[in-house]
Length: 209
Image 1 (cartoon, helix red, strand yellow):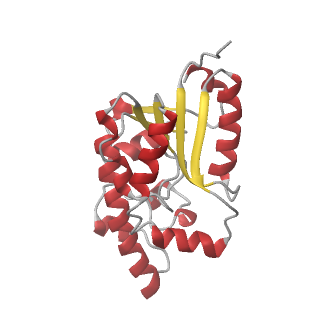
Image 2 (image 1 turned 180 degrees about the vertical axis):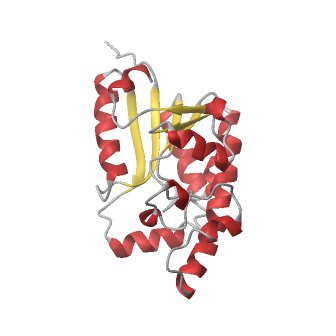
């Protein structure tokens, strides 16, 4: 008998190696969705990711022209009902989003941490460390102990994150955040609150996805 799945979900993220909370979350997410009759496939960079590879892929994310072709090939093979983006700032290029709403699938984006919102996610200790509006001046004002290299990196990151932000706001059907207060953060970032949904970490609620 051919198994009938509720939905086919293609998860897009940067890395496979369990280098942080996002990767661990996705391992558990796939197990839970599989147990509840969803067909799940994850597309990510294969192989072990150490610190130097992480930096390499971060730099590559500014110029990753072939990323849209890779993603569209996976979509054509897997034919998902949902394309669900998770971490997309350390490898995937912003142009992977273009045209995704022209077909039958829904496009979702999950925001796990402050990477897209602040100069350095590891330096966010309070909501005051998050820009209230999306502007270069506000973004750079959140730098802590700035030096020449941090300023140069932050300016490049603002440009890249602005490209990612514009693509997410244009092409994504559902913005998913892990807590209520992130709804306001995402709204300040420009997302429509009516298209923002709270899915707490973790995951009794995944049966209703």
